[in-house]
Length: 331
Length: 266
Image (tube, rainbow over all chains, first blue to last red; front, side, top):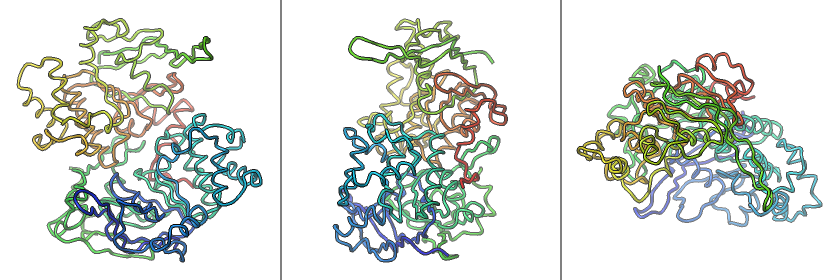
């Protein structure tokens, strides 16, 4: 069994707002295995990016960590480390590609200069380390070194994404967190980037965490998948387990509501309603208001976390009964 | 099935500035022939920069083609040669649905205001309030009284797209040009929006040009499909045939790239 790269325990994170503290992450615990791809799936407003920024230690007001612990690489206590210590491990141990990172390249600086900045921040000279840069570009499939002399607006979306990945890997981190790595790319480019990510992960034995709302894409590439809803992880486990036997109805409904080329004549299930939001947080199970299988108990009492192996768990009190009622979702 | 809209040998050049005086014409859209028939959902699929949106904008009259004509048969006129009055009537019949539900609604106004506006502009005779409620019911925003006075920021992405659809449906259009209508919407909402499109076709007889880069949703919702690559149509036909037996390399690539949870990348 693989070891744990990131261990999150009972994490509660909120945002200070006009309504007081708005708690977003509720008792999130997850162990992310080393050398594997872990996908974090969830819809907008489910807390996926909040989880990622907490792991990176980017905690600035109005964001507030109430309680919990995050241990990265078995020794770094992210939440109690001072800022300069954190800066030392960022990029080297753990690296982060934020959402729409391809648009964060400085438009008035050449790609080369961006690389130079990063090396400089680690006290390395660009011209003494060009071989590192060339290697990084080759790794992401940019064999033409002309890219270095170009401005971001001269690059296509896919090329920018490749540059961003090269930048994030230049200091050889063990762990890489990518937030929506394929937004804004069309399907063909997305497919190429995914193949590239998978290849790099295998070559470098990276621990990769990919955050996305695109559950189909995550199942294509991840080894482990965590499904988030309303600030909680409702199910976590090996992708094949989730694909074959979802323990949580939300996973099942999300997976079966993806239209695929082969699902032409099939009727897709529907998930009624919308998430209530964090202000009127449901009393019982977070998904109960939209769950076609929910009972009164579901709405009143939060379900227990049922752990079934080293990493996997689910939060549903109606498993396996709901499996017999699947037809309800198609009415 | 009768033809509603037909694009006949449509070309569109773009002007690229080369220095102060020199200009260069670059072909954008090249000899596109396309038709939208009554009571059907027709898909248009292709990668980004392929010219899908340009074709859509030419159909609704936001861009003028360099060459060729766009016939609108219910009025018997060429869209490119319409005068202002005819264009106003045409735009009530053929409506555009945008990709981003977050920017297509005015944040300073309520849902009611958005749906009332086309009715007022086109001098609707009858009870406007009743009509607005009826429209909200049609797009499954029930009960309507819950939504009338809400502002866009109080709604989710899927709800906003529904509000926009209600607004579009206010004038009983014959054709909807939907440019990536579900790509910015969460997965759990996507299927029900696609079902709504099917319902509009079956119950109200509205034809829809459904534009997307995701051929999987085309397979789910459309009857016929056009595959667009670099401003040209490389393949067209019945969806079933195109998906099960693609002829063009580009179509094959599009089908291969579609995210499918059961298709593993190793």
